[in-house]
Image 1: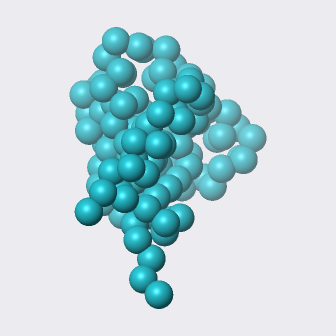
Image 2: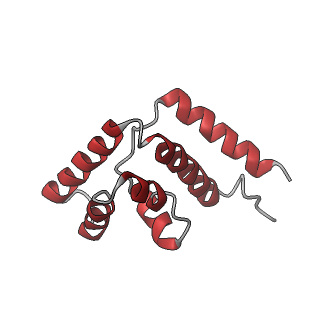
Image 3: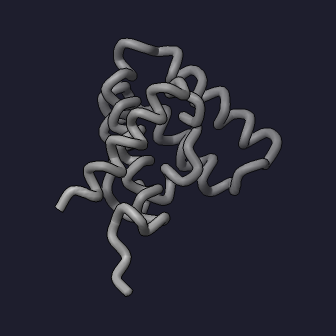
Length: 113
């Protein structure tokens, strides 16, 4: 039995994560509070060790870049970029309604041949 990208939960999650980070990247310059939230979350991770140190440090270093550099890095399609997005400090950056619309849109795109 062949599994489509839309029904493969791992691929669907990756596509949704990338789409969410693309939207966040587009908003970073106009919404500096998104960066502040992410930086505070990473600082918390480093302090309470709730996230593997390698990921927390990678995010700390990434978030030290300028806004343009951060925007590019958070949508990096490489294996490293995908790994970082699995543990993102931008969780909660999109309101539920926006997130659900984005998720539905990604699923629809993946289902379209």
